[in-house]
Length: 513
Image 1 (spheres, helix red, strand yellow):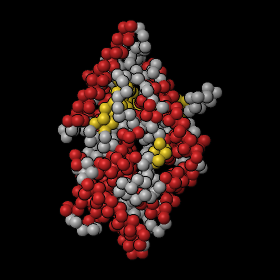
Image 2: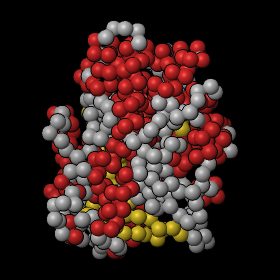
Image 3: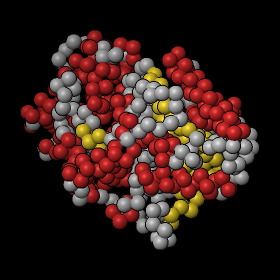
Image 4: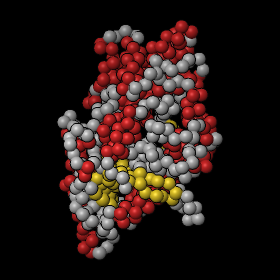
């Protein structure tokens, strides 16, 4: 296990590369940018505080089987983990396992937000486990199809089980110590599934913004975006929704007209390339939809370039009621986001996107675009569309465009993707997985909450739905601007943890599991 500032500095350098991968969707880049901003900011991670080496998170590596389901396959890879043992009560204390998802996992995973914020009061050892094939936990051999067949949520859960055994030995964790899983978004689903599939290893789980139901056509995403744009509590309004609709209608009008209007559109919106091809026009529209969707998904979070209130202010044009005011606001919003992500232009070349996604060499940024596309093609779907008449955006790109990417990059048919989504829901249970001792935490302004569990299904499977909260907001570091609803939700999470740990102690006394 390596300890010191070299790994820490490597992490900070890693952050500086974020947003440079043209193949990633804008929505994924926004998420990565926001997460890394939160993990790298704040006094608890400052390098200028003069903290001793013991206060820094410890980086380690576990040798894991490449194929945990085939005992005759001796190949292995190194999986990265982080440890914060500052507050650990000792070998009988609880272990908080923060599972990584579809991106690199940094030291902030065990030093910022929860579970790190909950560790001092509960005497927990905090461990962050990076997901296989993401960040620096990429097996030798690259990312070709022969390798990617070892990338799935089931493989990730097998890694968790193996890490549980190895880390228990390494840190001399008592067999009676309760392990509690934490995760957000896809990793939140993993946390819930870890409890479902390995109840003898994971005592309980906190699953934040966890989309446990796989879905091919995720039109519900934009249903929530539409509602949020009209939600006055977070800065939206019916006028904002109308302005967003008008802005996209103007973009589509210019795309149809072509000629000088198309050339001006390219320049004004900062498109990277020409927009003469229909597939490239769809790429532009997808980027713009992701810009608006990202403002909703990460509304009010530190590091997010735009909030709903700011976006609506731009679209409304400061009271300017001219026909072109919404379009100008969308153009300004694109400039703000590109500046924040350090992008020079909006990616609009479908051919370039396909070419970059076909690249089997691991990317420096660790964003994991090729890997995550593979998982959506082989497990989850999650393809965001705008087919409902109430959706304010363009109906391009439609579902066939998303499915076509799986065909172009991996040679996977639409029917195989649909079958994979059905199998995922069959294997885990979708929104009726019925796992005990799982707390689902969601915000009702987060488009992903519709794929999670938002209602308690009894005393052992509980749910918190935080009014007006965005994606994984409960996991973000506390801020003075946090709403009373968010503060109350965090208190309930702590109460639930206390209840679980009390239950664990009682079961130890009884000598049962």
